[in-house]
Amino acid sequence: MTQKIAILPGDGIGPEIVAEAVKLIDFLKAEGSLDVITEEAPVGGAGYDAAGDPLPEATLKLARESDAILLGAVGGPQYESLPRDKRPEKGLLGLRSELTLFSNLRPAILYPQLADASSLKAEIVAGLDIMIVRELTGGIYFGAPRGIEDRNGERYGYNTAGYAESEIERIGRSAFDIAMKRGKSVCSVDKANVLEVSELWREVMERVAKDYPEVELSHMYVDNAAMQLVKWPKQFDVMVTSNMFGDILSDAAAMLTGSIGMLPSASLDANGKGMYEPIHGSAPDIAGKGVANPLATILSVAMMLRYSLNNSAVAERIENAVGKVLDKGLRTPDIMSEGCEEVGTVAMGDAVLEALKA
Image 1 (cartoon, rainbow, N blue to C red):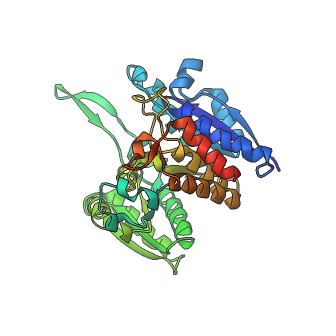
Image 2 (cartoon, helix red, strand yellow):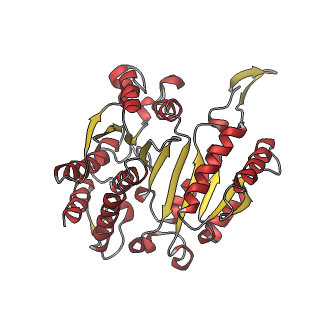
Image 3 (spheres, helix red, strand yellow):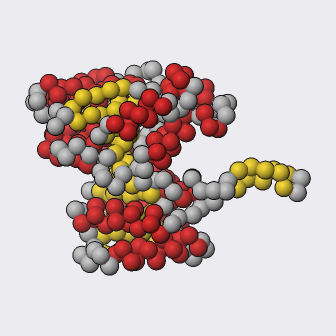
C-alpha cells in the first residue's frame, strides 16, 4: 500500500538539507524500492511567512494524514521579535503535541571514520552507540501554570515540571522495547533526590521494569549522568529521561560523536508514526552558503524507513551508502579533517546517491 510522507523543509539550512534527502527518496521510488508519495508544506518561520502561523492548519492536516514526516529545521533571528505564540519553535512544539509524538529517539553513534573528530580520546568513544529516549510532550516545557508576572515590585518567571503516571509509563515502555532489540540495558535519568516529580518517575520505571525481566534497569541522577557521558560514555546502552533532561543530555551526547551534523532523530507516537529530523537546528549563520551537512537528514530518512515505514532493508542501504562516502574521505566543513576532501551540501548528497545506486 502506498505510504505518504509529509516534507517540511522549514527554515535556515532546512530546505538545503531536506532537498538532498528528497533526492534519495525520489531515486528509491523510481527504482521501485519505495512505494510512497510526498507532499511539501511550510512550518516554523516559513509557516509564519506563508500563513501568519508557525503551524498553518494545512500543514497540520497534511501531517495528520501522512504516515511519516520529514522535517528540516525551524528558527531564525528574523523571527525573534515575534510574539511567543508566533515564533517558529511553536510550530515544532505544536506538531509534537498535536500528533502526540511523545517518544524522542536520539542516537549517538560514532562512525569509525570520524573518530578523530570527537573532542574525547579515541579509546573513550570508539564504538560508541547510545540511544537516548527522551519524553517529548510533557514535563516542564508543557507544564502549567507558567508565565512572567509582577511580584513584590519585580518581574518573576515560573514554569511547572510535572508528569502523570501514564506519561512516565508509556515512555518507559518505549525505552524498554528498544532495549530489548539492543543491549537489554536501560539507565533511567532523574533528579529524585530533590524533585518529587522525579520520585514518581523512578517509582513508575521500577514498575515497568517488572514486565521486562531480561532488561537491566539502573538509575542515575542527571548531574552524574552528564559527567558520566564525558567520563565513560560506553557504559550506556539506552538512556530514558524527561523532556528537559533529555534535551540537554542528548545534545551533550551528540558532541561525543564529533559533529551534531551527523545525527538523526525520531519522534514517535504510540503506533509508530513519527516525525524525523536532524538534531542540529536551522544554523542560520550558514544558511544559503551551500556548506551544511545533509548526512543527519539523510540518516533521518533511514530512521523513518526503519521505525515508521517498516523497510529496514532500504534503511540499511542508506546507512551503508553514508559509510561508503565517509570511507572515500568526503567531508563537509563541520566534519573536515586532514587528508580528506571538503565538499558542500549538494556534492555530499550526490555522493550518497551514487553510493546508494552502486
